[in-house]
Each structure stands twice: as structure tokens, then as C-alpha cells.
Length: 91
Picture 1 (cartoon, rainbow, N blue to C red):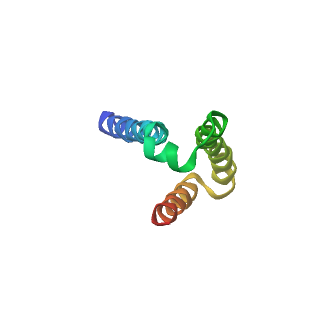
Picture 2 (cartoon, rainbow, N blue to C red; picture 1 turned 90 degrees about the vertical axis):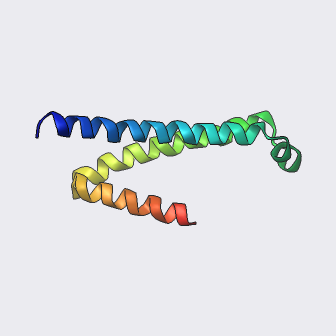
């Protein structure tokens, strides 16, 4: 596994970071829409809590993946995470 594999891993990790940024942009643009603000009337503290929930979920996921990876292997942990993400996307 040489340089080609390293580049592949770098590109895949870059896409993960890009998707994380897209999720942040979606939350921010939702809060900027007048229709959303008029319908739900969220307070600034509620907007902050909703945006923070995204980061809290990330923290829980990071801690969980370490436990699962040590117990069941990294490959099985990634497969479980991908399946869970797939189900979440369908819902």
C-alpha cells in the first residue's frame, strides 16, 4: 500500500470534512430563512441549542465509535455506522 492508498484515504477524509461543513451550512441557512423564523419563532437561545445539538451528537458518536471499535473491530463499527446513517437518511 503505497502513495496511491494514502491519497485515497486523504480524499475520503476530505469528503467527510466537507460533508460536516455542509451540515453546518444547512443549519445556518435554515435559521436565516424568514419563513422558518415566522412559523416556528425560535428564540436565540433555542437556535443556539439546536445548533449545539449537532456538535453534541458528534461527540456522542465519537465516544461510541471508540467503544464499538475496540469491542467489535473497526470494520464492523464502520459498517454499523454506515447502516445507521442510511436508516437515518431514509427517515
